[in-house]
Amino acid sequence: MSTGSELDLAVYSKEQQDFLKDLFAAVSDGSGAITPVQLRQALSRQRVKPTQVQVERVWRNLDPNGIGRASFADFVRVLGDLFVQSMTPRPWKKVLDEAIELVDLGEHSRQMNLSSDGGSSSQHAEGSSEANEGQAHAR
Image (cartoon, rainbow, N blue to C red; front, side, top):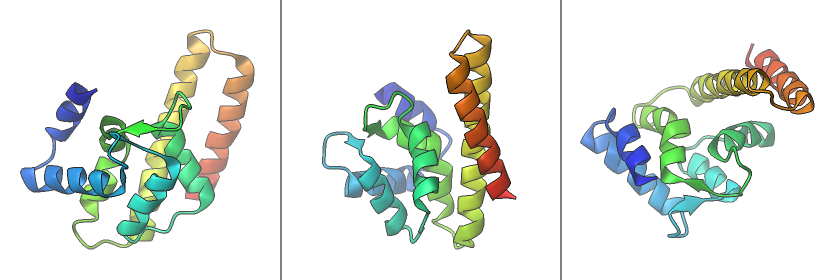
Protein backbone atom coordinates (compact mmCIF):
# COMPACT_ATOMS: atom_id res chain seq x y z
CA MET A 1 0.00 0.00 0.00
CA SER A 2 2.98 2.33 0.13
CA THR A 3 2.42 3.11 -3.54
CA GLY A 4 -1.08 4.34 -2.66
CA SER A 5 0.22 6.65 0.06
CA GLU A 6 2.91 8.05 -2.26
CA LEU A 7 0.29 8.72 -4.91
CA ASP A 8 -2.00 10.40 -2.37
CA LEU A 9 0.86 12.45 -0.91
CA ALA A 10 1.89 13.82 -4.30
CA VAL A 11 -0.84 16.48 -4.09
CA TYR A 12 0.67 17.90 -0.88
CA SER A 13 3.69 20.12 -0.36
CA LYS A 14 6.77 18.69 1.41
CA GLU A 15 5.76 20.52 4.59
CA GLN A 16 2.24 19.08 4.42
CA GLN A 17 3.56 15.57 3.71
CA ASP A 18 5.86 15.78 6.73
CA PHE A 19 2.96 17.03 8.86
CA LEU A 20 0.74 14.07 7.84
CA LYS A 21 3.54 11.54 8.40
CA ASP A 22 4.37 13.02 11.81
CA LEU A 23 0.73 13.08 12.90
CA PHE A 24 0.19 9.46 11.84
CA ALA A 25 3.41 8.34 13.54
CA ALA A 26 2.45 10.17 16.74
CA VAL A 27 -0.79 8.21 17.13
CA SER A 28 0.22 4.90 15.53
CA ASP A 29 1.72 2.12 17.63
CA GLY A 30 4.47 1.64 15.05
CA SER A 31 2.59 -1.08 13.16
CA GLY A 32 1.93 1.10 10.12
CA ALA A 33 -1.79 1.22 10.91
CA ILE A 34 -4.14 2.94 13.33
CA THR A 35 -7.20 1.84 15.29
CA PRO A 36 -10.42 3.76 15.97
CA VAL A 37 -9.01 4.88 19.35
CA GLN A 38 -5.89 6.20 17.63
CA LEU A 39 -8.08 8.01 15.07
CA ARG A 40 -9.78 9.85 17.91
CA GLN A 41 -6.32 10.69 19.34
CA ALA A 42 -5.25 12.13 15.97
CA LEU A 43 -8.37 14.27 15.85
CA SER A 44 -7.86 15.41 19.46
CA ARG A 45 -4.25 16.39 18.73
CA GLN A 46 -5.66 18.79 16.16
CA ARG A 47 -8.27 20.04 18.63
CA VAL A 48 -11.13 18.37 16.78
CA LYS A 49 -13.83 17.01 19.08
CA PRO A 50 -16.07 14.83 16.89
CA THR A 51 -19.10 12.98 18.18
CA GLN A 52 -18.99 9.19 18.36
CA VAL A 53 -21.27 9.03 15.30
CA GLN A 54 -18.87 11.24 13.32
CA VAL A 55 -15.89 9.08 14.31
CA GLU A 56 -17.80 5.95 13.26
CA ARG A 57 -18.67 7.46 9.87
CA VAL A 58 -15.08 8.44 9.20
CA TRP A 59 -13.85 5.07 10.44
CA ARG A 60 -16.13 3.17 8.03
CA ASN A 61 -14.32 4.96 5.20
CA LEU A 62 -10.89 4.35 6.69
CA ASP A 63 -11.61 0.67 7.27
CA PRO A 64 -14.21 -0.42 4.69
CA ASN A 65 -13.37 -4.11 5.19
CA GLY A 66 -13.95 -3.92 8.96
CA ILE A 67 -10.56 -5.29 10.03
CA GLY A 68 -10.13 -2.72 12.81
CA ARG A 69 -6.99 -1.09 11.40
CA ALA A 70 -6.39 1.62 8.81
CA SER A 71 -3.17 2.15 6.87
CA PHE A 72 -1.35 5.42 6.33
CA ALA A 73 -2.56 5.39 2.71
CA ASP A 74 -6.18 5.17 3.90
CA PHE A 75 -5.52 7.86 6.51
CA VAL A 76 -4.25 10.24 3.83
CA ARG A 77 -6.99 9.29 1.35
CA VAL A 78 -9.82 9.98 3.80
CA LEU A 79 -8.39 12.60 6.17
CA GLY A 80 -5.37 14.18 4.48
CA ASP A 81 -7.18 17.31 3.37
CA LEU A 82 -8.84 17.76 6.77
CA PHE A 83 -5.53 17.58 8.63
CA VAL A 84 -3.65 19.74 6.13
CA GLN A 85 -6.34 22.40 6.57
CA SER A 86 -5.62 22.26 10.30
CA MET A 87 -2.19 23.74 9.57
CA THR A 88 -4.02 27.02 8.85
CA PRO A 89 -6.46 28.38 11.43
CA ARG A 90 -10.09 27.70 10.43
CA PRO A 91 -13.25 27.17 12.42
CA TRP A 92 -13.08 23.45 13.27
CA LYS A 93 -16.81 22.92 13.30
CA LYS A 94 -16.97 24.00 9.66
CA VAL A 95 -13.96 21.88 8.64
CA LEU A 96 -15.35 18.79 10.37
CA ASP A 97 -18.83 19.32 8.91
CA GLU A 98 -17.29 19.59 5.43
CA ALA A 99 -15.26 16.40 5.98
CA ILE A 100 -18.30 14.47 7.24
CA GLU A 101 -20.31 15.66 4.24
CA LEU A 102 -17.59 14.37 1.89
CA VAL A 103 -17.50 11.07 3.76
CA ASP A 104 -21.28 10.78 3.46
CA LEU A 105 -21.08 11.46 -0.28
CA GLY A 106 -18.38 8.80 -0.60
CA GLU A 107 -20.54 6.28 1.26
CA HIS A 108 -23.50 7.06 -0.96
CA SER A 109 -21.39 6.62 -4.09
CA ARG A 110 -19.96 3.32 -2.79
CA GLN A 111 -23.46 2.06 -1.95
CA MET A 112 -24.68 2.93 -5.43
CA ASN A 113 -21.78 0.90 -6.86
CA LEU A 114 -22.67 -2.03 -4.59
CA SER A 115 -26.28 -2.01 -5.73
CA SER A 116 -25.31 -1.86 -9.39
CA ASP A 117 -22.77 -4.67 -8.84
CA GLY A 118 -25.42 -6.90 -7.26
CA GLY A 119 -24.59 -6.04 -3.63
CA SER A 120 -27.02 -7.20 -0.97
CA SER A 121 -30.15 -5.09 -0.84
CA SER A 122 -30.18 -5.14 2.97
CA GLN A 123 -26.70 -3.59 3.11
CA HIS A 124 -27.74 -1.00 0.57
CA ALA A 125 -30.92 -0.11 2.43
CA GLU A 126 -29.05 0.17 5.74
CA GLY A 127 -26.33 2.33 4.17
CA SER A 128 -28.87 4.55 2.44
CA SER A 129 -30.63 5.33 5.70
CA GLU A 130 -27.28 6.14 7.32
CA ALA A 131 -26.32 8.38 4.40
CA ASN A 132 -29.69 10.16 4.56
CA GLU A 133 -29.27 10.61 8.30
CA GLY A 134 -25.77 12.05 7.74
CA GLN A 135 -27.07 14.46 5.11
CA ALA A 136 -29.77 15.62 7.48
CA HIS A 137 -27.15 16.24 10.18
CA ALA A 138 -24.89 18.09 7.74
CA ARG A 139 -27.66 20.59 6.99
